[in-house]
Image (cartoon, rainbow, N blue to C red; front, side):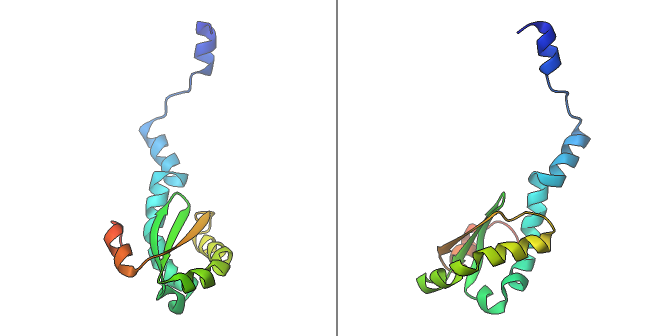
Length: 118
């Protein structure tokens, strides 16, 4: 590749301001702020009865992992995954949650693993 081609294909450097703005729209800062909001809207979205038996375990770039109290809840709640995802994304006003994974676990497991606010 010639020098002329290299100059033509080299990306323009981003200023820190532009990088932060882009990141806050869809990147790291966007997901950090939505992670905190997710804990607030989880109970509202799924309802208090489900929230007693299903806990947010992790949320990383669209993948929401939910711990449920036992295999019976796992079997029952898997039918609601599409509806929960749709409701959560309506609350956020964007496609923030792209996947919901259910796992058997307990509230104590969730509390021990999560560094983010509840």
